[in-house]
Amino acid sequence: MKKLGELLKHIIVPMVTPFTRDGQGIDFKVTEKLIEHLIFKNYCDSILVAGTTGEFNTLLYDERVELFKFVKKVVAGRRPLLAGTGAASTKETVSLIKKAEEFGYDAAMVVAPYFCKPTQEGIFMHFKTIAQSTSLPIMLYNIPLFTGVNIDPLTVNRLAEFKNILGIKDEAGINPTQMTEYARVTPDHFTVYNGDDIMVLCGMVQGAAGVVSGGSHVIGDKMRNMIELFLAGKVKEAEKIHQALDPFFKSLGPVGGVNPIPGLKAAIEFMGIPVGPPRLPLVESTKEEKESIKRHLIQLSII
Image 1 (cartoon, rainbow, N blue to C red):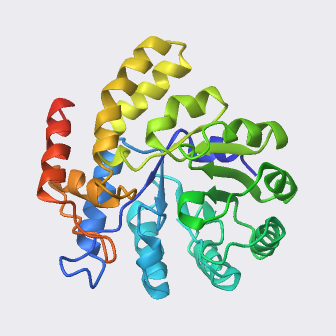
Image 2: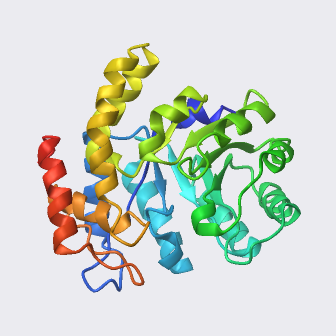
């Protein structure tokens, strides 16, 4: 089994889910357009379907399954595919990961169980049960800001003993040095990914293979250039790109909120891809927020 870093490479784009304007359904025509944009522009090395940026938490079970199936057909082997199969319950997660395996996905990303705030033993048993239900490579997903729990390094150490638990995505902005702890307590075949666009260089210094980057829907070429410069030892040049991108990333977060999905969807729409609004309870970016995002895109020569 390949290392996740070898399979998925440096830039995993967690694809947004395009919705109809009323939010009642997935717009599959726009989904196809978005996929072609990501591949044609070479903005991604691999694609994550129904992750946090894909608003998995507001997708019905059948919608997620339909989305898995549709994206697999459209991508047609041109990029590795990662299925976001996490759910609040272990039972639903197992069902979703079996669907992803049935459709021929390359790997699955599984978020820590949320809302119920399990103990570390509960988290371990959750992932153990999932790992034993599938042969797919699994990437753990740690995002305490939204789940309410942290996957502690010692728990990750225990989980890395399962042959198909091969990595973790860590939302590094919450605990910027935890990636180092993960890397230290796991075997060489285990891969760490950074889940925060603003923390890309920080993550790579700590040994991360790359980033799960929502912003790369629109700045994927700049993200790729920054990572390649860093890996080539041209740190100052990479730092300049980081500094240029930082204001754009920060503009995606709404005033009084932490979720960047409305802002990211607005940015994608400025590029001519009508991905629609987020689903409630998320609401569209305000006029002022959209103007700020547009201003940053102009400054970066994106539009």
